[in-house]
Image (cartoon, rainbow, N blue to C red; front, side):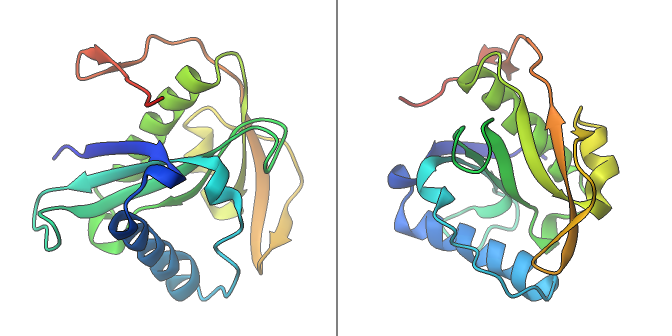
Length: 172
């Protein structure tokens, strides 16, 4: 099953799409992980948002959010660009969408920020997942919002970014 990608700045998201993203983030990060924290941290306003929509069993507007993350501009969270708030809603887990989402996000990172590394604050339990995507741990374990995390960095890799046979188009 393929996903339909939507990639845009915060101000270009519709209210309905932002509501869907917010609901998914709250469901996973706050409710499932039992972690009360301030999800709206201000970084969303200075980020690109990557939404992966599924048309299978879609209940709202003929589509359902299957994967999401944000690409935070350099200088906001870290000196490097960062990918964060990576989420696959429950009904879509176990299908490889997390890796597909990250591959899509990294391809877009390499187009937007050529020559720059990407730094993330990853949940420690997901370190192996991010290692498989080229990230290397760059910190000791630290606790953030009651959950063990590590900083990880992926060096820039010059790649030919192709999406379904055509070069990715990044909105202006």
